[in-house]
Length: 287
Length: 318
Picture 1 (tube, rainbow over the protein chains, first blue to last red):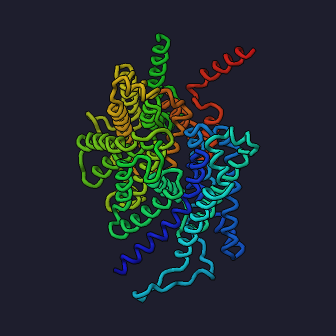
Picture 2 (picture 1 turned 120 degrees about the vertical axis):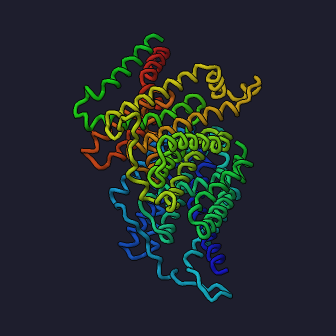
């Protein structure tokens, strides 16, 4: 029973992290039809940046801030310099981002080497909270990640579907020419979306680099998680990311806990099964 | 057409003579020739799909990996003879194509790319986790080389000619398939699937056959890879390797079958040379890839066509 509860808690807090990671990917795709396959490399870069700053300043929050902002700016640069010109050629953009991921992976390996890193949990969040009825406790920081994910989810949903800015963004995607004609600078809107999406993955990397260790190869792992999440949930839908993260996080943890050898196969079988019935993902729109 | 035949003949002659005309044959026959042929066959499986169905698959390394792991594990751990394990491995990789194709072919474009990438990365994470089967990140090492009809393929020259024979055979098979009515129907599906359906074609079986055929090529390439590097590890099917393969296909020219080999040869030579100067050769390949994608998306094979088109455009605008 104890193992069951701990596995569930691990799964659901990991789902929170996956949500933070994949929400940026789906936000950018959902609004701009641009798929960033350097997403895993972005996550890892944020981990390194926030680790370095947290280590230098001895303050976790500065690290997280630096990780998020660096990635926000970096992502925007990648968009403006490499992707914007081909924005309406989905496949070409996806391939260019894979190239970016290759260059980043090598650059990070050269700077940070092959060791694994993990940022220290800030003292103010390092307590453990007791689980009622078990006499055991669970690290608060992991719960904190889950709370953050829920807040980001609500924030994104309100922003996109309830505010004027969200309406502009949605309209800009549906009919760029018409929105431009209304006097709105659509290019600036796109830049902000890319900034926000990259900022989110930067934040995810800073938080994830604290709950889990990271290093060479982490980029591929988190790209895989993000892809699984958005494929299962449906690309471009925030609600889909929430469902996908929950499934991949919880089922992945139970599989790892109970059948370690075949954990990957079980998650994968789930993905195949869902796609067999809904090729567009659980909440995805028909292509 | 005749000109094309002459080109093929010249390339084939050069490839046959390569071990005798290259400087420093000990190095180049292996690191240049055999490596390029192995990578080229893997890339061929990707180009075939892209050219005939318009689908860019990053799942080819999944099939290579399945076949490669089966050969490596069965020969190192269970002493199975290659005569049994190689056909079984290729069969398993090809059958895996049926399962993946059934799911992936329901999608298109960037979705297809993502799904097939997820498939390959899934094998990577499985190979890392399932230590009892795959020995985790250490991988399966010291796979013995095959001996066929008394020829020992430990040596680079026999291996090079074996790879050349496989590459030529598979290239010819692709060309032959493209010339059949099946191949022409495939191009129809690529250009306008709805129209093919309304003309009474059942397109799913056509797409499925093409996909499974490409996984057959990828499986053969997987076995070639095990014989070439004599080991297999999760990194053989990792993200970097997947992108490397994509680089080869795109740089060579993703809509040409020959592009697979042009790209593979170029990348093999490029990496072999640049490796001596900088440890950042992977990053250099990445930069090359981005530049090609931005400036010449048709790759090297398409450059002359691109220039011709541009010249025409200029004349037209005058």
